[in-house]
Image (cartoon, rainbow, N blue to C red; front, side, top):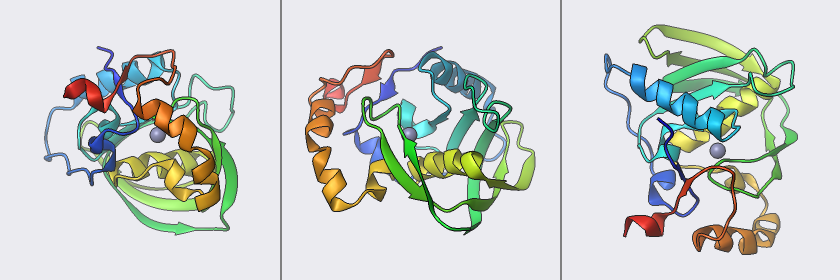
Amino acid sequence: MIYPIVAYGDPVLRKMARPVEKGTDLTELVANMLETMHNADGVGLAAPQIGLDLRLFVVDGSGTEDEVLKPFKQVFVNPQILDQAGDPWGYEEGCLSLPGIREEVKRQAKLRIRFFDEHWQEYEAEFDGLRARVIQHEYDHIEGKLFIDHLSPLRRRLLNGKLNDILKGKAKADYRLRYSSAKR
Ligand SMILES: [Zn+2]
């Protein structure tokens, strides 16, 4: 099932998400999130982006041409970033909840993370480069943060027009968006 993707402006994107209750059957939710993400040509999707304030995100780079991301497919449940290291480096990011916006974001190069997969198997692993970046972007979502929060006040201000268009429901995307006003 393809969910509409929650657009910028919905309070669920600004909430600290709750841990998933251990043992919950995630088969259907994860399959639906992957389907939703593939349909929108995304590389990552976090539960708040489909309106659920849960600490869960999925990553799948198989649709990209990037050799580092292409084989990277993983479900992260109740993840905990244990450590981040390395010089911050810049890369242009986008977000399915912020259609039409792409900006360079600086993030640390490496991280160590503990997480469960959708079968409740626990892992601790290190990631670097683009894989670390995708994880950091999605992890921000479950902390109620968005990539535009990392921009300087000036660059953020320059985006006001585009952000207002999203708030007004005027942004265009090739997938279905859910605007916060639609709930009222
Ligand atoms: Zn995002």
